[in-house]
Length: 303
Image (cartoon, rainbow, N blue to C red; front, side):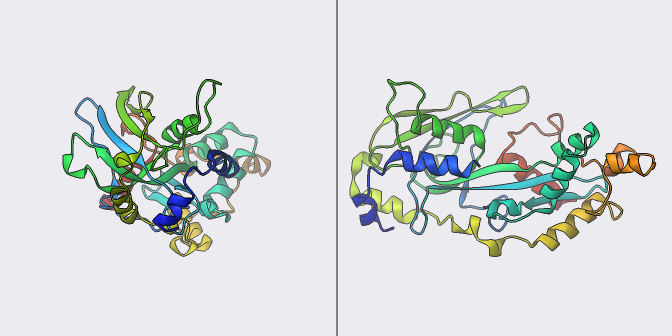
């Protein structure tokens, strides 16, 4: 969609965005280095507090929605190796970790459920965002970045697109003319990043509706298609091989669950044999979204 087409289609029914979000109920592209310059990340002080103002931008040319979403897994196996990979479920394909987790969850044993919990997939959203204000990095102001976040911030978006109360007007926060700035407020609560204080400002046209400036912003936007392009995902067999290596050679995809072991009268192995080791809150005080995955990737690379 060109900028002119965007102007013609302004005022797109918010219900279309809401419907798309609900229908998805929940792709990630080729893994980028965690210092990818296209990606904006908030800066926090020593106390874990941070503040910035962003403007979420409309769908880029070639995209139907202003966001994409994907899942990945990040955990450390009993071998000491890390499994940090995008999930094929992001593009509607079977994923070996998902299949293993389903089998473990349905085994009827709490030990298996706990293993599945520790290996569960993580949800991420990606949007184009204009940095309106970034006190910790003023040079970012006026630039368009990719911004990755999790369910907590997406819920804030859904709250304004689909308000709860009758006296609240639905707002499309991605709209150039009728959207609203997002005031990102980060606090450290019990060791985790908390976004509860974040909020949208009142509706206002970006750059006062100056079309030349809006078109400049539009032309700076990044394509999101890479995040849902199957060619940027590892194959099922590649992921299965990686998973077996991380969990140990003896822990193949066909390994028995706790229930099957009992039926075979085989003593259950020690938990460290088969339980993936996640990073706990004590080990890393980060939000459970992109910041955590970046941390995982750094640890894996350091190993």
